[in-house]
Length: 416
Image 1 (cartoon, rainbow, N blue to C red):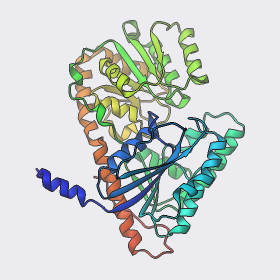
Image 2: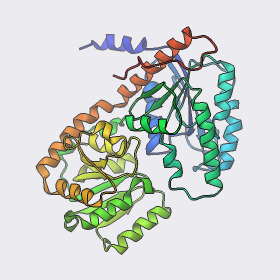
Image 3: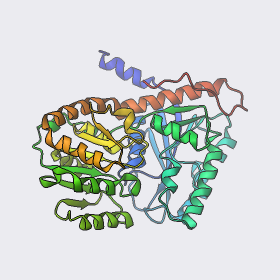
Image 4: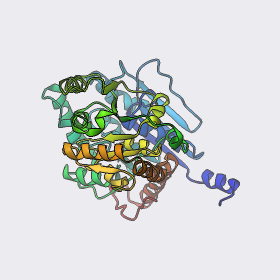
């Protein structure tokens, strides 16, 4: 074991980096998805004394923005919580102004550098061509377009993606969350050879070793954004034909209260499941975690999922999970050992998996214990260490590369 003093010295010497972290909506008032990834990664990186992290993003007025000695926030005020075309245009002009001409060692985008952030991408390249630019690919374009109606929004999104693809080819490294996402992003015509897989992490609040001691109720939980791609409608249909519906309740948590959530409520009524299926809005972790502890298991039947933090959070709490085999969960779930993978469109198979966990409590608990052990590999301290290693590798290449070099091969980089 490394003595505490030596460990502190190792942390202090970890790096001497000035990092600009470019995001969209700032994440301090949001829960779920990229917002939590950004928040946890920023706070984990800021623990390193010699990493000077500047986060650039948008935030509605009057939202408190925390800062520390190692974490500087540059917030562009927007008119409302949701993105709008006006706010995106303002960001295009405002981001370079907030950024200024300061030089950084690493510039890391956790958004596609399209309509909102293409300006700061170009300005940063002009200020210092040798500065490594990294882009985290959050989600896939197919998620962005597949279920959207035609119209002005779709046109803007296509323009956004066209610009993003061109700039992504100029980045030193693309960071993806899973092997599945790596394969799919290549299908989009991006052949950037410098693609590194760094999985997302799980917040420390989900690692509760006493979660197995909580008396479980006969409830099944799904949580996440209400969107066709998340498959809540498939889950409702499977619950209808599952035997476990006789003595279990299904709880669906998330928002927004839009057309898809309304259609799911209508589906529940049409299938005669009123009183068996309950809908709740997004919950804070403080409210969500006790409910997850009381549940028997969780189900995430997404039609497509590049990672699925919710499934991994549930695993960290010792829950057996049923997750989609279409995407990221296949990277961290060994089917039948620390979770169950299903084809979400196979309604009968999904129902059978639910009945299996509901009727086999001993197996369910064992799967939950294995899941909790597996989730230990995804703590944010470890994830931040992986990012820091990548930053240092990129910087080392940049220092030896010529000023005209755009990309280098990072095939030698490995994630611990």
